[in-house]
Length: 403
Ligand code: 7TS
Image (cartoon, rainbow, N blue to C red; front, side, top):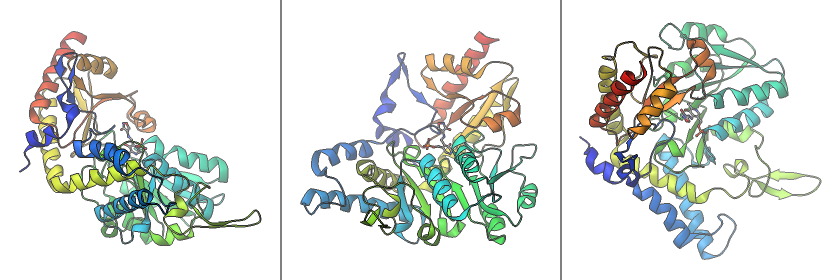
């Protein structure tokens, strides 16, 4: 059993008052708040060990480098990867997916090749492939949804053919808050010898992920959605793919030897980490994952599942309220009658309640649903049933004002 009040004390921002009301922060799918240990780490690194990594013989540079590489090892253990050189630090999920599109695409794809994504993807798992489509002439196939916004697995199986080269799919939808059967999706792709990129942006904060157990070929996630800092994320890739893939960005640190007639590239993971990395953010991300380990990802999942079930039960009492899909533990998207979600969000904001409204960077899913956007409440381990009660009171008030 977690002591949520104790956990809340570790998050300074949760003490905030918004328009003189206590902050009720339910926009965790966009970004989570940070525990004090993460905030302090950023300050400590700048105060005690700041020096550029990997290129100095001097003491501070070595200390910073060691701390950054310890963080890589923390990430490796966190996702159950075989090797720490399979962990590439990026700016976030978006950059991780762009890296695969550019480097896997540049190495393995040609005109006429096909990749598979789904109707419920975030724009960052759609647009990089469209850019590749424009560059190389590849084809994007899209898994349709069944009635209740679940991936149509039978239709997915039919999308494979001799030209299929990659599947790229969200583990958990940022709109629907529902978990896709990722192991089954991977097994089906592997039965066709096709690798799978898992967009873990919305799953890493909420559930145990073991890339070896899943046999995922790539996993992308963002630090800021899992209690870590902004500006840093991870791409996990199986060694065999990363070794074969051409680099993403060119620059310092990703090379072995540069000549004007021929340049050779560094070994993994540095081949994919051109330029000065956000080593401060990376070190703080390690702290964030250690913090999650201390609380226990299973405990987090249990608490968030309870919150979600409680919120669903309460929301369903509101007349004319529609919930999209079958949320199972992180986010709930809804609409009430013909109330515009932005109006609802604005009134809730005045009550100190932060939810997100709009298309959530998933416009093809909105088109499928035939709506311009939703209101979305999303949870983290520090949220409470009392906060959901406050949300419900806020919604009831807003409905009265807007009806
Ligand atoms: N993939 C999914 C499933 C996401 O939910 C997001 C961000 C991204 C990729 C991109 O992550 P980034 O850290 O690189 O921006 N999702 C959201 C959201 O739902 N509200 O704000 C950002």
